Image 1 (tube, helix red, strand yellow):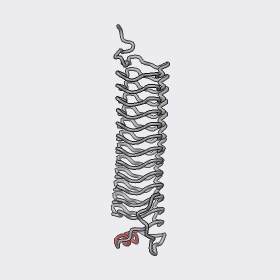
Image 2: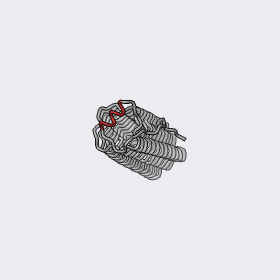
Image 3: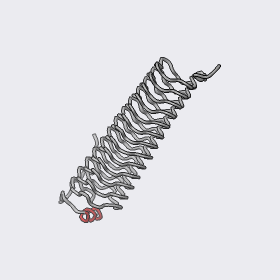
Image 4: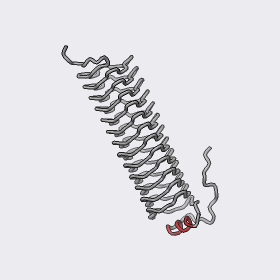
Length: 298
């Protein structure tokens, strides 16, 4: 059972508060501001590290460039808030509502963001290194060039989420729901995607080398020019997948279903194809596990 580091009760704290009151109280050493109403105010570039805003209503508030290290926003309403370039290292955002929020270049390293609502949020170039996003909702969010190295996104929902060029190396995406997600050029080196669903996702030119994709749903996924060197896709479904020009060197595909997939010009040297379903698969120009190029003469 989790215990909050903010256990003291607020003394004579009004629910409605203005910016000057907040900053004056914080400056005098007060940190507990739970449940306050502070909508649409400007707190840009302020240092409010360690402040407790649990269950507060801070929607449309401007935290641009603010320092909020270890701040507690658990279950707070932060819809359409602006956290661009803010420092939220080790912040508690569990269950917070950040729908439509701006978090461009925000540093959320090691933040607690389990079950957070980030629908349509803008996290372009945000840093979420080692961040807990288990069961988070990121439908239609944008994370271009975001850093999610070793982040945990187990059971997260990312429908049509745009993660183009994002760095998800060694991230945990176990059982994540990522239908129609855009991961063009993303790095998923060593990532864990066991049991994930990526039906219709776009992973063109993505790097999935050494990634673990056991029992993963990759139906109709675009993996053209993707790097799957040493990846494990055993027991996965790749029906109708586009693997044109993909690198599948030493890739494990045992017991997987590639029926109707396009493997044109793919490189499959030393790939494991035990009991793999290759019915109606296009292998024109494909270099097979034994080094033979399909369609070649002689």
